[in-house]
Length: 376
Image (cartoon, rainbow, N blue to C red; front, side, top):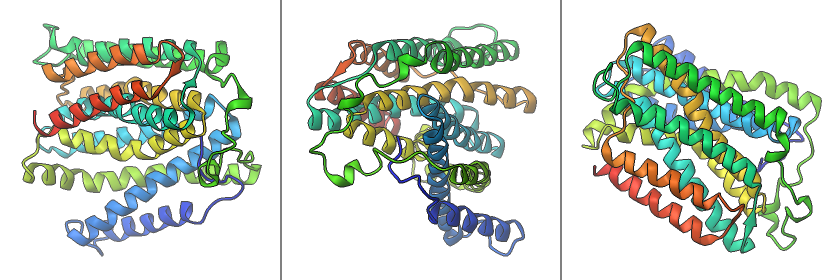
């Protein structure tokens, strides 16, 4: 699932977080002005670098423990970053902050289930004609994903106890617990009781011998040494902490920039989701190019599940504890897109084999999602 060698720790993976930590220290001590355009630009670049550094160290740990644990580690780390950005905006008091969790998680689902999987199927299908994966893994993941998405984003529009598109406090707490419990059950099935469902079946056909060397780089990476793994164990939480602090600095400027551009508030959620999912998206596409579609499916569906199963309980707890309103119910056009995405995903991943056509369908839905995000 990685695209870089894990035999050593690349310098950028610790230099970028170190530089970001220095800039954070200078901002917190008022040496650098937080509202300066140049400083915000630097913080944005460092945030992107810190995200990639976090994912790199997560990939090192993933390569050490193997699949499907690797996909879980990467998905959870990406979700931690996503939650940090959401909570930062929720607590900033910016306009529309009560809807940012809904917009971000919904955008993450649309991006991974349509944008990422669409690219995987189109590029992988173009190279390998037809690709296969385990049907049991996809069906189990989609069953949980469909349940979590419907309960979290459709049901709030039809309950009477809460406000418009909102659960009551008791409902929100129960939904948070149910989401976390269902996700934990899925992880147990994925890692313990039915781990074989999420493993590649035909190891001999994973790598295309005619593929370009630069695309094959990293497919047969060695398992990281104990020393490299220990370094990543230390650097991963440090990089994640830096991402959280940088996100806090950028939360208000991002909201202001979207408002000044005359774009809907939902665009903030799209931007957040795109930032945190970029490294994971690249890993998924590269796995598909290497004819490792099972890894791509694990990453894509695992990311969508973690995004709902972990984010909703956290933001629910923040909402109840801090007394912040939380709107989860989707608007009508987004409900249509969600239902369409789940329906098409069931058809696409319901046979265990895919071609370029299914990828084109998902990319078409993704294009419509981007259009409606900018022009409701």
